[in-house]
Image (cartoon, rainbow, N blue to C red; front, side, top):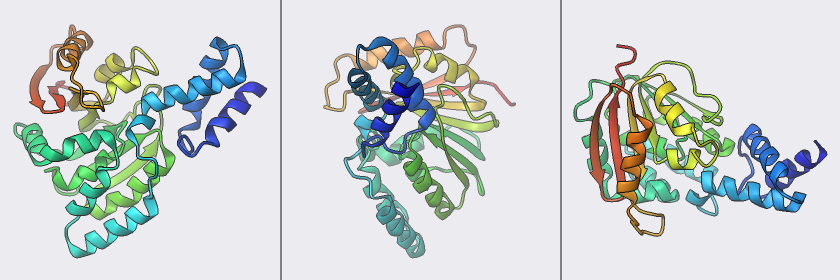
Length: 267
């Protein structure tokens, strides 16, 4: 137990990993302590896994207070989009989507009925795309990620958009928010979450309480290499949904492969 407490403290002392869900750090740390020869090796391995899960996508500095002030000014001016777009550029996954942001949501929502409730799993900065989402008036939006400071920022941002929003910190590989929603986003998250739990993708697809799931996979690496990724992830997705009687629409974008799934739940 002493080694685990030291490991958690050492990881938390790093600015890059400060504020990550403590239960997640402890779980990974315990696993790595059982596999490594020394505490130092376990700390490094824990940080490496946290980097794969989320750290690789974040900018070195995330000035949340400054960003929130900019967003509040933009809300008063009546147009959140420019400020949201500038902030989303600080998250690698969102940055890849910016060149086709309008087309992205237009295509996803094209055949959907009015969406009044959303669950955004492993969301990162994706809630900043709310000004592009054609949601029903007074929609509910629940964002969830492992970064406490980020979720505090998102929680302060959501009221600026007119949604009934909340942002919570948690590891969705261990606990999926239970409230039923119209639509759940799981954008480019499954490959990362499967670094924590190899069964996470299948479990999230089958257990998330949403009528529609919008699931996506990267079609290129963060460095821009494709390396057969669309073919690989399409096959992986087919494996994850094997046996499910779901209606699925496939949409290919330059850097992302999207599946819009009608699960038939909560009709």
